[in-house]
Amino acid sequence: MALTEHLRELRNRLVKSVLAILVLTIAAAFFYREIIDFLTAPIPQCGPDGKPLGGQERCAMVSTIGLIAPFTLVLKVSLTTGLVAAVPVWLYQLWRFVAPGLHKHEKRYSLTFLGAGTPLFLGGVAFAYAVLPTTTEMLISLSPTWSTAIMPVDDYLDIATRMVVVFGLGFEFPLLLVMLNFAHVVTGKRLLGWWRGMVMGITVFAAFVTPGADPLSMLALAAPLCAFYFLAVGIAILNDKRRARRNPDAGLEDDEASELDLTVDAVAGAEAVDASAAPAATAAVPASRREEMDDIT
Image (cartoon, rainbow, N blue to C red; front, side, top):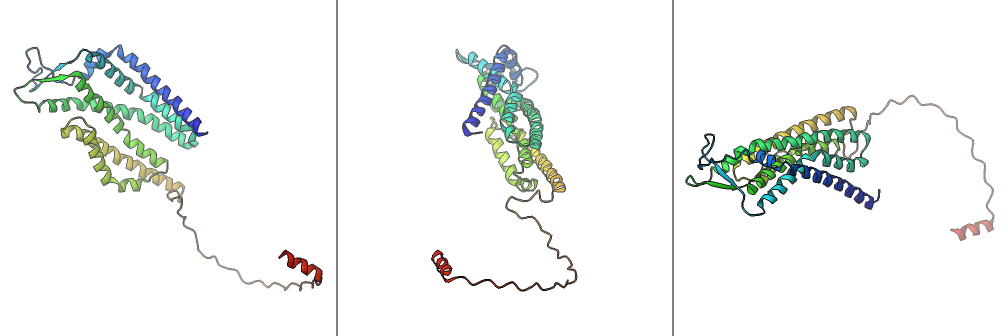
């Protein structure tokens, strides 16, 4: 297709993805109270007397500040829920945009990656929610002992939303590495050679994107990402070995020559050949013809 047709196709895929997110956002708006209660459950809340409930050491008073804060809260919760719930839709639209440029076996691989991408993203979301209570308690414990922490709901949901999206996208990282290997972009051996830089990069990435300043939330994201990285390297190495068994030249670069068999075969004995007759003498070229030939030269 021409460039304009590709852009038109991209626009159509984006519109379908946005419509799916919008529909699910509207549906989530009818249940925003239940969603907010579910998201704020990890907060160690204070009782009516201001003391912690459930035998916890510290607690926080959850509040909404401002007249339009509840409305903003509804929009934020509903949009985040719609984005997470529409993961299968926008991943499928992404695959449909890429699929026309793939071969038959590449489409089979891409469908497998599409099926693995959704549970990985949802697994990251679930892992973020599991880590959220510990992160919240650690952040609240930093406040002075004589004070009561007052936590605006929108601030807390900013942290929760950020963790959910970051953990969900972070869990897609190993899938991206495996896709690059199956697409012949990078080998498993090269991925393994990058392990020092990858571990450092994952740690720095986790330190910047996690909302809390505590090392727990950073390690909670960096540790599984490092484990997934080495798992992706193992899958890439196994795939390279499988590819090498089927085609010994599969690991060669585009500008790299394959190994040639230069073994010299044995030559049989010489065979006598009769000499051919001498060629017949040609007629002499007339002088006028020679002049024409000189002119042409």
